[in-house]
Length: 329
Length: 277
Image (tube, rainbow over all chains, first blue to last red; front, side, top):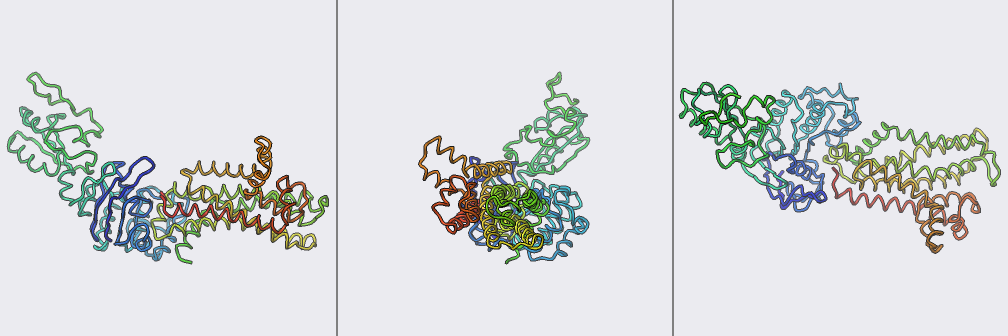
């Protein structure tokens, strides 16, 4: 289902959640919707799902929304970020869903079993008593059982365990390639294999639309940790590394910067490198604009900021007697 | 009826049954009915009529005050709670028309209010026929039921409008209680107070009173039994001396029905195109 948005805006009283967003997503395309908290991702998802009014124009599969709602509603599936906190029993939800989607309850039960969810065992349980993960599995089971043309998934794996997440990836890859996907996620492991383009929102505005490769080169981040022999500090400092404990230095880099920096580092330091770790950060850095130079800043160290034993790391190393930073914290 | 309509109605019926709200309505009606039977009103001959007619008359007099409260507190939170709990987000992103959802909720709640009332009326009629051996006053029974149904529909429509426009459950509940208090206060004493305080023309005050669906239903119910009753109050007395019982019945049935339908349409217009999350 092709999505065409033109000058799409949404205001909540005085708050402008979406501002003149224009984009097109071809039928069969798989798009990641990324952005910082409050950037308008969920609002855009809800507009696409037909839950919010808006200004501007939105066409789904060639049908103007919301006036031609009926023509697209059957081919569209939406999974909200949080499942309803209602007292309705699981059995009623499943039966109602099967009825409005023209499916059988057995089909939905089969899909749920893919997530290790036995619906017959929880059929009497009110929805609100299920754990967040179980509710998410239930919603995904219902959604993926529908042969839809447009899937709108808002943080679909946020509450899932590793096994369920893998099953989701497998099931998703089995869906028709004609189906369009809008996936709201911060996780690299979802964005990388599941989508082929990215819409990046910032403060309600579309700041990037394009291929996933270009986006990940600028946004996906790795941490390079290097343990070096004494005397290498100036080389590392010049390249934006920060000193940590026990002769370890670290720096966060984008995917585009990583190969050249590693090559340079090994060429300059050679045998003085005792150990080297390169770790991919799981989340996308959507809070900050991509750095335009190699200077390090606190914003480039999202993982460092969240490190539980932060005191072990020397944030601002005091100069040593020779003007060099001390390697030990 | 399409699958979507049936689904909406079944989901809301499940909600009504789980919350035991229907049971509460049945209990309220039964307690009121039993109360008027037990206090011996069936034997009272003070105002000229006895038996089931007398019980129904007293019951209806109480119901015109109770029905709006039950309707507003039962229907007022329906939509706003669904919005807050994420129920609307789940179901209205499915092929479920918003009109079906709103109509389904309205009809189920209306049925949940009216069904127990019909049951209590039927039980009272059976008790009269087989317990007391009296004839059932079908005319008054039917008229009372029709007026109660119109009054209920009026406040179901108003409750749905409140629920659609309210931004939170707490606000919807507060507004529902305020609306009930206003409609009860405007029956007589607030109007007479206004008349005395600001020296409004009598026609204005009476016109305002007749805009109140509770007042219209009350006058139609009571005037159908005895147009000369002093308990009709000044507004009721004024109206009954100028309109025939048939005209009052038409006013008591049509005006609340019209108010409920207009409020429902206003809510529907907002719900159909507005935000549901």
